[in-house]
Length: 456
Ligand code: GAP
Image (cartoon, rainbow, N blue to C red; front, side, top):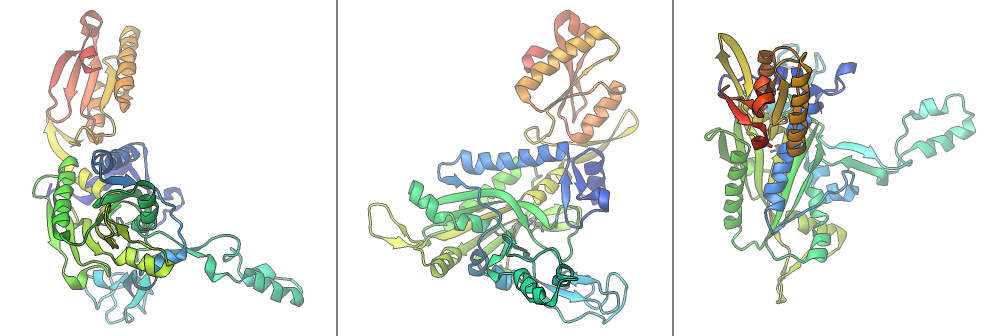
């Protein structure tokens, strides 16, 4: 895995229809990525696996899907309006802007090479601000809108176009707040026993100063988050249980043992709400970097909601009068970083019959295509007809099945290897006689003859 370069992954992802640069045809939009047909399948397989493991298979978990746009008070109460910032410096020579804490040399501009030209760092808020409804900022400037208008109308126009501060909203920078704001609703509807969790998957947006390293640091990405509500007594036990659950998740993703590391985040580096954080880091080709985080968020969020909204966030322990605001353990998973770790772990190069081969040794449950079906020769109608029959049966059974009759068999195998298809099924003349097909294994390239009905 140490030999895997980021360029290999980016190139394969584009060539084979996993991930493309966002808005590519217009020169791209920095920090945005589009998923192609295979990428969307891989991403969904990862997200569905997560939902199965952490929601469906547990009896202490509730799912929600909250709106991305939320009342601005959410982000005031959570502290994001005031503190969700990164330190920004600007080079006075080339006007390049950089994240101060990520500069290789804090005195030298990485774009123009000037030294000592950086401004003092200022706190740059990473939330994307927007305006809800027609009381927001118009696309036209006041000057443009009022061009040629009589003076008497200008004042009226200015008034109409000035925006209402109450219309401000933000694209959510984390999915977590959509969980906290629904905590009371879920408790009132289901009255679960403590501890219990609420899970959500969905888009998050951050106006990163320097998006970089493929999908690793994007401006639009997806999170899978759980807020696990607990009695604060014994939070350490719950925290440890989540460390173990995260490790099971890494194994289910097929990440090699030893490739994920726990970093105990020191107090001065923790988010404003956290009393303990472990970052799980993965050995990416770009170095050891954060894959996901696990934080003890105390009652910071529910406490703030209670204070700002005036609504009671206390939980009453069943059969007693004991009431308290629950504390929270939060495992926060990034989809893109999981997907990138999966691709890096699966990427392999070897030699077959003297030729270099690239393949993705994806776990079968994550592979975008499970089976590829081919007739040995595409100009033999009887083979094609039989292959279509096998294809239809496998597709009905597995869904993610591909038909490929382009080029020779060797080329078809190479194509499927590169996208991580575990099994290639070929229909030949013997199939017509005895109903057996060859099934080729992606990793070993070994072929077996089996009755196709057995696979179905
Ligand atoms: N609710 C807690 C929270 O959002 P975070 O550490 O800021 O915590 C959680 O983010 C996870 O989201 C990260 O571990 C990472 O997997 C993912 N993530 C954060 N920023 C990202 C970005 N710009 N691009 C891709 N993934 C990101």
